[in-house]
Image (cartoon, rainbow, N blue to C red; front, top):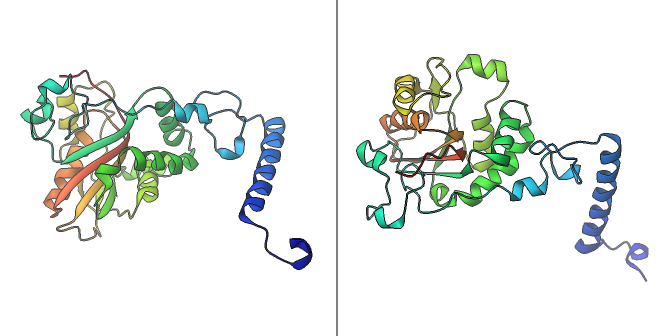
Length: 261
């Protein structure tokens, strides 16, 4: 007697095969009717049900190449100049940041830049889940042992105009996230500004949230989409340290890489 006649439950392999066939049919239908394009490369999606970014673009996102600074995540010129026991760049040795460790998926360029822009400016919030999964794989050492994740907040005016905070979306897919910080003032665009000016702009731009959770003695990981000079991350980390965090780390989807120093 076959399984259908006996009322037996189909095997997992049979269910997967049926699901794959259904997904292939849906892909073919969507490709013909909607002709959706990849949010990163703008090429026609062969498998629209797999998400708005094609597999080729996801695979093109390369990790940052070691050696990297243990504090900020910037590339170092060579293993020979590493200051033991920590691999730290000259900038972090001159002005130690408030974060103990930082990591990013890759360089803010190519497909990764396009994915971040699709989330941030085009409202493609569904991309936060696969991007966070990539962050979890690439930044696992920084996330390991963390007690809580804190997204970098937007100013209320920016939050209203955008409709969401992309850092919060990423944090929620990475683990337990809390809103421990608030932005106290809207800051001017940081684009094109030198590091020193960025740090001045961020001074006193953040404060504990009105109903901030207790983070005393906890290991906190800040989450954001992009880190350029680390000014925003550093300003947030100093507030969290003042709230009693035992250690503050940071993970970002992308990092603007400066030339090795």
